[in-house]
Image (cartoon, rainbow, N blue to C red; front, side, top):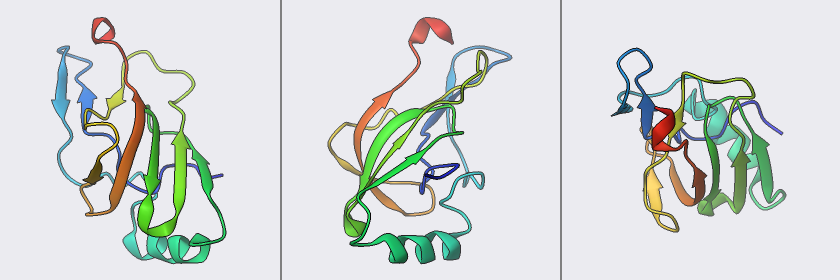
Length: 117
């Protein structure tokens, strides 16, 4: 159980004051992908001994796997949220890199419907 995912998984974010969405730029330091030293230390500890991590707090419902560590992760969206959403618009079932260079396979993403933003 973790507060946030172990990668920066949002590729797009809603622009709440003007509407629409925009690409995420820069490195999201409010995930467990940062600081990178702490993330790597954790991943080395759980490598081979845990298969599932549950996280939240990113305004994004997503399921991923970190194949090099044998770890899958599910993240729920923030519980109360009506103006600020993150989305992952990458292709399902393919390997991707976050803004820190962490590899993950996107298993599913429950992005907010377009009519919401």
